[in-house]
Image (cartoon, rainbow, N blue to C red; front, side, top):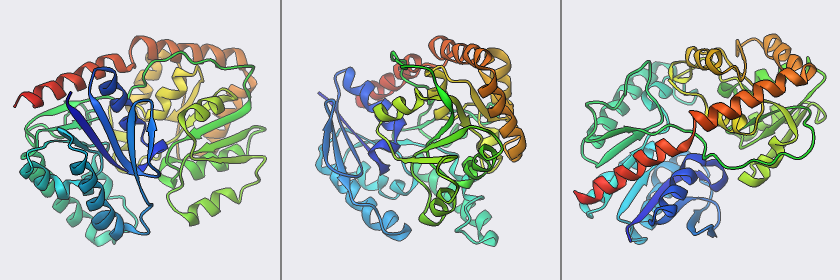
Length: 363
């Protein structure tokens, strides 16, 4: 039985893509290990090797990452799947040891670097170009690169990697039982940052008679303090939740919110955010950014309302409309659920992933 080891730098309950891929591999006969932040545990036949939270970026990049890679090596995995760009520093070592290496690129990192506030503005273009050159050099040596979508129809790794495969962030379609009627509240789940529209969503909810539930991890303590300073009866922070508890929260909410700001790659991707697919799976109508791909898919499936993510009044009006028109909201939610079942589901993506594993194991 071949073994696959995923390495991701985030906590166990903040890596939906990793668990989705790991569960598919487990269900098809692979032995699976995940290395990440948190505590050691065994979850549904998947071993999770946990590491302490890094106290800073230097420690995360050069100390904890090395420890995680060493743990992956010790696991004796045949395939090691890297989910964070700093882990590419160790790809050469892994290849020297005879391991198959996949880079699972969750973002368009050269583009994202251009918007990183902790990099001085005058250095960002230089850092982005340097990273892009480094990424290309590594990806040409390893066995494959995965990415969640194209950008304006183009695969950004085409010609830059030995194999490049698009694996979309669709949800695994499972029965979802939502008890009772949803309350007059909206939910935003995932990483909580200004770029992901959290500030605007909090400002928007203050202009409605509803409540905003936030689930996930804040980017830093200062930003958490800023957002949690809003009245708790309007902005209710639940923390980082396991998947079961998160879906229970979804069951209490009338609206899913994903209003990413038009920074970095967000407006240019040919996909929806992972959380939008989850909201749709749960039958919630979605208030989402009016990016081209989202607008096109919403016109096709009619599962929510697209808004200017930088306009809190427009966000508020969309949330209030859905709260005040439950029958129309229910129809949108049903449309979203149907779209997930028919088009945005994991079954096709899973086949591409498993075929890739079998392919590289033959090399």
